Length: 330
Ligand SMILES: COc1ccc(S(=O)(=O)N2Cc3cc(-c4ccc(C=O)o4)ccc3N(Cc3cncn3C)C[C@H]2Cc2ccc(O)cc2)cc1
Ligand SMILES: [Zn+2]
Image (cartoon, rainbow, N blue to C red; front, side, top):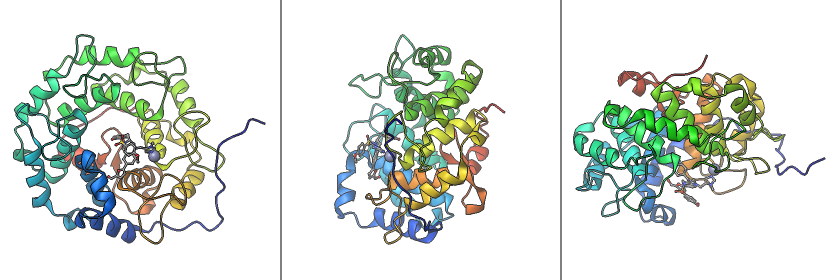
């Protein structure tokens, strides 16, 4: 038998400890001198998006300090129009998307100059349709997703060449039906989410081989019930989201063993501190806490979490309020 990296699940599975997760996330943002908080300044804007989205799914958005967050975002928009992870940091498409996602949840897009955000994103598109993340010029299909998701949330997709953006994504498609970060790169669940999400927003899902990609995505499930991101890798809670959101958009969520995956995710909760880790017993963080909760929201509505939109990774009611209809295969 081939040696499979995997983990053993204990037999007592805790239930979803929603109050503990809400307290973990709310206190993460308040005691700013805490070691972990200081280590994530370089991605603070994304960290705020991860925490707020998780709290909104649990019905706790009104317990957050909206004014403080809006003040912070206003200070992070640079003259270029791009938005940075923290004050005085360089702008980047990753944090521009996180900021726009936060402002859509708070219904507060007026705190930034939207036209300048649009020109910053437009200027990142290359002749071959691809996008670079910032002024240093690294191309990655993740940044294509950030660009298209940001502009569609602002209802400004007209600012870029969508057909060329789609052409670049198709160049990243591999023989296994999956997608890598650039043409020729290996398929990876996180990049598959970005490519499927972009094609969902632009209405080009018909260009995907849904059966072949769906099969590759279900191959990510291990005997522990958990999902990995590539063959032979260990399971990790955040891959629950990357794989499940893509399968949901492709109309093949029912191909996964839901019970096994739910048990794996619940075991990754820290029953003392609250929060989710990548694997049982590891350190929790806001990143895995969000993706554990969004996966549970897709898997079972009985967890009394708000529905999550698989394309934008934002609460469904926000996407409805914006009048957005990202496509899905049925
Ligand atoms: C702990 O080591 C890392 C490695 C990469 C990163 S990352 O910024 O490139 N990134 C997001 C990410 C965030 C965290 C984290 C810790 C605390 C917080 C507070 O908000 O967030 C942890 C991991 C992480 N990773 C790394 C990872 C997750 N699972 C497996 N790994 C190796 C993902 C990584 C890439 C990324 C994914 C989505 C996204 O929107 C942005 C970046 C961050 C920490
Ligand atoms: Zn992870």
